[in-house]
Length: 338
Ligand SMILES: Cc1ncc(COP(=O)(O)O)c(C=O)c1O
Ligand SMILES: [Zn+2]
Image (cartoon, rainbow, N blue to C red; front, side, top):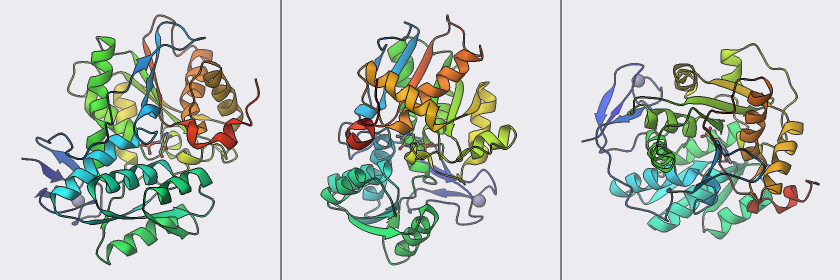
């Protein structure tokens, strides 16, 4: 039997009710105990891992952008929406500026649920159109924070709030990526480099690898101007806010303490990359045939920083997670010249 647990206040409860945060202290919840594979599936997970032209044989790219809706979020949505359906929930609400909204809208459609997605003004048009095409209702809010507040208001009117940045099922759904990587590489890599905003993927990797003897060094790459994890571990980063990494613009991730633990205990680090570095990395990825979005290219930009500062050695086995598809962004990719 699975349980909700709050590591902050000790709250524990059966998972027979929908909870996205601790009802006792308001902190984040985690799931313990046995969890079934998601019942609602669109074929997420089991993504390929490949070497790419121009990078060494020890550098592996985990192609999370090949998930059903073009991002790793599908792992979390499958798990969270399956749980919602199990509890008889027929209507969900979510706030997202893009990939999570698309993913949740698709899995809600797959589950036959009503979905409302609250997006901030300025959300990438391609992403917004996809959410609508999937049958979800769009509500627009002034910015990211207002979108969260509006979504939670709608929750009080009878729809379950998914809250992927908080939701313990969403994080749980990410964990399988660790066993996939281990099986694909026939061992555990030395380091994994991944883009990070609210930390769901980072924590999925950390929790997933915790069951094995070795945890790879986890490098969390943040976009300049949106680097709370970096700032929690290093000095303040005053760089101008990234415009390109639109999927990484989170300033107050609810799981910051857990994210710090994941990076420190794994022996990794947090990094910050600028829009100039993102353009360089994106161009390299496109040259190698990988059609990813700018927020994903941050992981390669982070890798380049680590190589330049000698923190990664040639003989080390590295995994770079490519999180989101560039097919949603033809207008951005057309700006990249070779
Ligand atoms: C393409 C892409 N990469 C990375 C991330 C960061 O993921 P997380 O919020 O789990 O840290 C996001 C989140 O929206 C994303 O859309
Ligand atoms: Zn609590």
